[in-house]
Image (cartoon, rainbow, N blue to C red; front, side):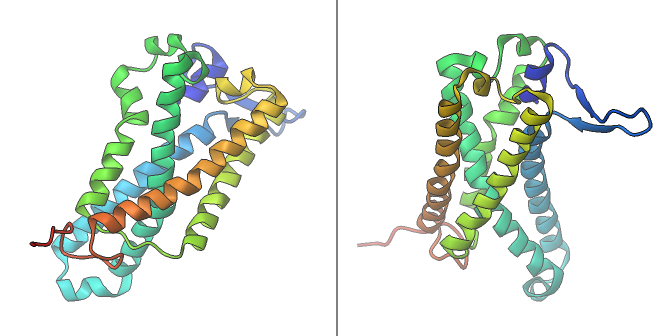
Length: 226
């Protein structure tokens, strides 16, 4: 959302019209890369709620096979590969740059458009919710290679769309990109992508520390009595 407002001034959204003929026009929202992060978090927590409802309705034996088991696997895949590392990255990168120079990520005029609570809902609460979800529910991590490759694929698609928008419209969806030189932009994007891998590994380590095994357990790990 903040990317949209940045590129259009004080309007909430602007559409890019591509094509020279009046009979066919292709409209693309500039904020799709930004919105995709929020859609990801919404889909994940919606899936969490759905699984909890299913657990309340179906007997325990029915939860170990079929659709319920597939939903649990999907939940764990989304959380481990996407929701936790990307949510953590958004929190850390946004607020780090914001406190350095807010005009690079969230220009001051947006305060008149986006309520403060909504800004925190988009950029702050995502990390506490991810940590809370990890504490109350164990998540099965797959192989590190598969997890990092999945995260790399998502990042490549996301970055590709950001670059395509710049190529097609001549604008950047994030203000900070407009201030960087070509070399600085490459370094910035490279560091951003590389940072996601350690965040994935951090999530795996935290999950293992809280729970007795990656396969799941009845609750958080208890300290052993001496």
